[in-house]
Image 1 (tube, rainbow, N blue to C red):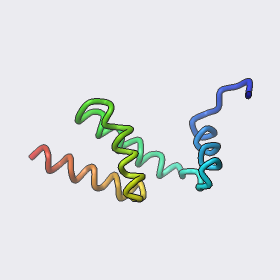
Image 2: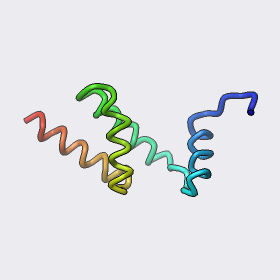
Image 3: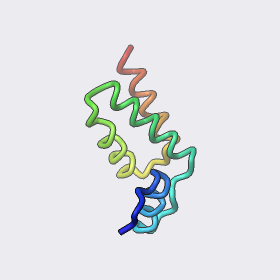
Image 4: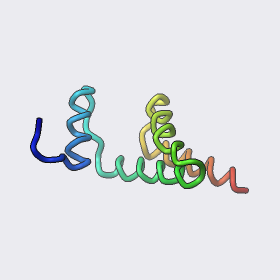
Length: 78
């Protein structure tokens, strides 16, 4: 077990390796955090991780997912 706590980027890189996936880019991380922020602030906070899971199941890249979430939120508020 490591003596230090990894950064979020280190942890995500390690998980990506376990999953056989490339680590997310800085841009992808930013898009996912923005997506999660919209979900968490527009509903109950639990919506954020579930929305991110749904995006993964849908196999959408983070930038497209963020655009869909923004569109949904804009429609919901009109």
